[in-house]
Length: 332
Image (tube, rainbow, N blue to C red; front, side, top):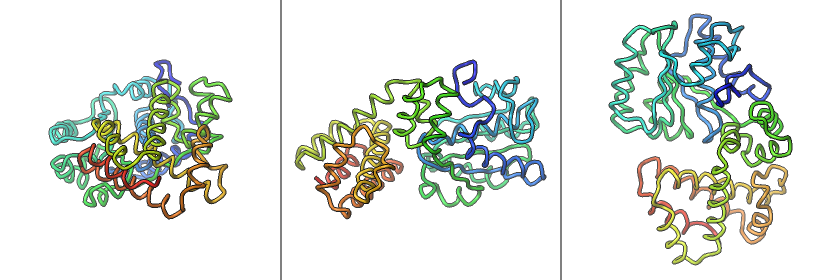
């Protein structure tokens, strides 16, 4: 962990190897004079897409890096970790057209300190249509001293006109062992707790780091999984009532749907004898009971229903109606 409490500024560890491979590919192209100036990083929520983008920014702005490894301690690295470097722009999601226009105005100016501007545009699949369309010209013909890094959970949800203008990389979860090692080293987690969180996170280091910093993350996880188990036991009218109660906050529901997909994925793994790969190990009894009373086809149907619900939310569907449809399609 860096001195300001944010992870990721230290020298790379084995746990960061996937992130490092992406950065090496991009920095190698930069060194060869063939930069990929528009990049799309995809992967599960909280898998580390933003951290990968900031790791690349540290490399670009590092005063003392060796190869593709930023030092993590110089002024440039520290400013990136604080998201305060004058040539770094991290936009808020969902992206709006005014933010794109301000970014374009900024990129038209020369960098203040470094050779490059770098702009990070998270959750690009949630961008408004006007913002996405306004961004196309910058993606197709970015200023020669600018690097645009977009992130998305699902590449299929990104407009094809945006996706086709980017070099795409997938940020994958770490192994449980590497994730646990990173939590021990970077967050000071005890070995047993680090392994438990790494397992629950499914190797998503950014989620596990957040769970160490914010106990409410684990509390919210427990709440959403308890809600799912309550819904599965309920009748159709009860499920509709639950959807009405839970579907009032879009962002919270996005988190809940992701946790529910992980739960049903674990049920499917148990049905195929793959208990060692189950993520929600603290809920094995409920998972085993569901696996025993459900057909494989119904579990696959549940996963498809939840995938569809997540896609509809990305498309600005009504949260309560989305929750209702998803709950009604789940098996009992």
